[in-house]
Image 1 (spheres, helix red, strand yellow):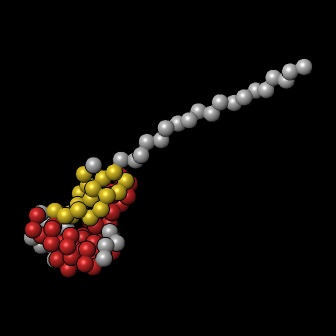
Image 2 (cartoon, rainbow, N blue to C red; image 1 turned 120 degrees about the vertical axis):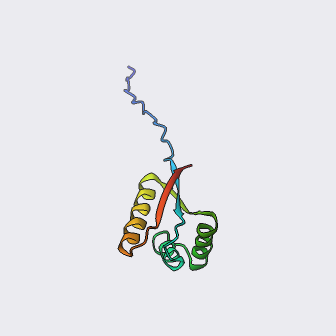
Image 3 (cartoon, rainbow, N blue to C red; image 1 turned 180 degrees about the horizontal axis):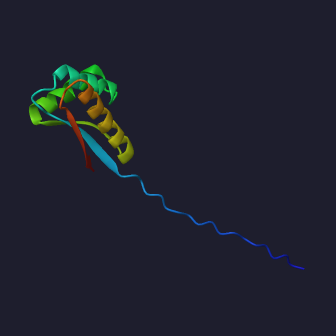
Amino acid sequence: MAVKRDTETKDVTDLEEPRLYKVFLLNDDYTTMDFVVDILCEVFHKSYEEAVQIMLLVHRNGKGLCGIYTYEIAETKIDEVHRRARANDFPLKAVMEEM
């Protein structure tokens, strides 16, 4: 006598990669270069040398790329930049752009 076995089929869900966002610092006439370097080191975990290079891009080109993150992480980094800038009386701004 043949035994009938119930077989389950598993639904395979294709997971999409999360969207990524570029985070930029924007140049202004008041935020010091040293403060920008500190932000890049502390918030974006850049080496001092890399932070100086990005700060110079911000200064010369009006904006500089700090990193590429998922939406939630990018948003958190931007909020941290703005919080620290306000606490130090600087108008430094960070923005994100979808890739």
